[in-house]
Length: 465
Image 1 (cartoon, rainbow, N blue to C red):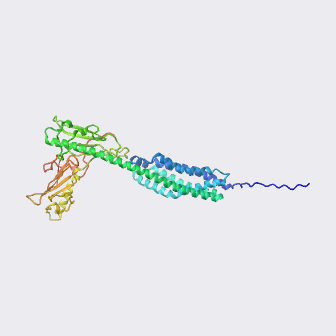
Image 2 (image 1 turned 90 degrees about the vertical axis):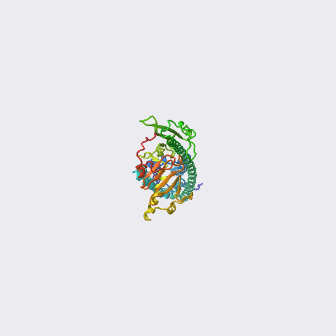
Image 3 (image 1 turned 120 degrees about the vertical axis):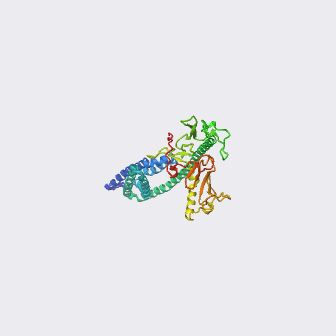
């Protein structure tokens, strides 16, 4: 019996990958590792750059919360790690092609946005260049260039690795790009809402700080006005040894009570007020005083120390509140407000001089001839203007029509202003710190103020902090 010949059916085998395929597989894996290192280096150098640290220290916004940063990092790492794992599935070409497609979608989208990243870094680097070279930003720029080159290499390797399974490759690339585009848009929307919330909170904090500064400044101005008014009424007594020695019924011309309790702890929010009388070496009386409003804490925007003495000029140590100042930065002792500038008495005098120059040296009959700053609170007196807290008066000489003077009288004494001014025929500016109009017999303003310079006679030491 002859048996039928036996036939053997061989199972199909997966054709071995060409040697060049191994090169692309190894190349894309190395590319992933290098891309991770380059991305980390770029983020690290940018985050630790002096310009970034300075902006973060002086920003009024606290920055994105850690939870949102973790969510954004996880969002980007998910496709990156998924592609990296799938690229090791060498025995399953479909999975490896899927990983290659994810790599193309991920790094291809990065190449699309890389010009915007480059321009952003370039602008920041250019702005920081005005303060000297920033090595951190320069290294971040180099890391970005390296990441762009590595991304191109990864895309090339991914295309060669995924061409054996085009369907899986294209679908994975498309889904990755949709995931990144839609998801990143949602992330940016969430970050925008968080930033808006932080901005509103920062604005509320800024308003509260400005109110704190205003309250302290108003308290200093009120007490200084009370002290100066008391001394003007009793010049032989000098200034009091303490604020409690002021008469309890003392009031400013505006009617505001001289509340000496303002120096008590907690009376002015976040400030401590200190009154220090200055004794005359020749007598036992106090010929001057120092009133200082010192913030309880440093770091609140524009909450700076405020000081005044018998000269009636209120000074602020502007910039003292900055906790991370730039090199060579120092708080400046600035008159705030500048009574002379706020009165605009010099501007009015300049307008009158200009009128005379164009009218044969004849001064105007009234301020109406000037057309200068129409006064919403104008009275029937055409020689009077109200500018802010000052009442300006044009005073033609009755004996000589070619002669005139100008006066600026503080209308909110001990609140918005303290000094009043008088400009005589020669253009010299006289001042008084008392609650009355200035006269030609009052002292002249210092030369430093006359020529708009920083007055060096204020030698008060900078408060600690």
